[in-house]
Length: 198
Picture (cartoon, rainbow, N blue to C red):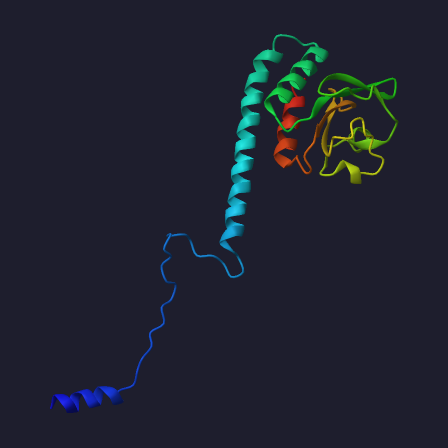
């Protein structure tokens, strides 16, 4: 009887049950087709880096407010901003201001290597910020048409225009980095906020 039962099992059809969505050993969420775990990890690292950068700017801004409240002198305020930004941001190679003086962009308070005292008219990133009336981010200055190389070690740049009470541009905050593609929208957002309190 047992032998007949075993023979019957041999003839019985075999059913394969597929395993749908097997659990992952690391309990990580399921990835969409074509998305690797490396790309997800890189995206998280970029998000963490942006959060860290924003928090650093937040601390700098909170330090600046009581310092700048001690004077309404714009030169003193620019000097303080340039000094604190340059001290707190290691990737900033040159940090300073250019102001319009009789139609020329002339250097103001700054930190870093020697600057060009007067920038050639309507050339380079600083003049682009003045003429376009908006922040300019340049990942590679060597590819920017008409770039003025005050120091050949600079590789990327961000320029933030300064506006008076009537909305007229009177100068720029100019920051250079030796790194390529050193500046992001986080820098733009916070630097615009910082120059707004000059």
